Image 1 (tube, rainbow, N blue to C red):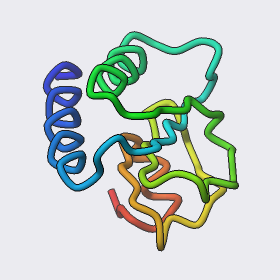
Image 2 (cartoon, rainbow, N blue to C red):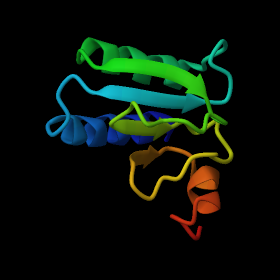
Image 3 (cartoon, rainbow, N blue to C red):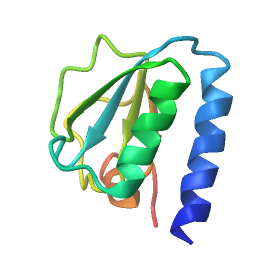
Image 4 (cartoon, helix red, strand yellow):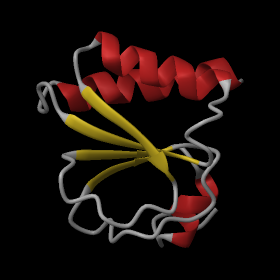
Length: 103
């Protein structure tokens, strides 16, 4: 199930990346110094696609320099305003906290 979700996320990122070439992407994770296997796979994929990726703590609030923000499944809530920022939530809990998801 996790591999299917990761695959779907990668397909979605590919679709988004067609509009964002060599983007500055912020990848918000719970602990930037200790990534899990899925976070490493996604980071490596984005690097291979020649995007500029910054792995940041999920509580980061200043994301003005990034065209796309990806919120990892390990992040429970966000501190930035996602209303005017392209944001991909991999975390149901963070999406719910941000008012994007109800379940």
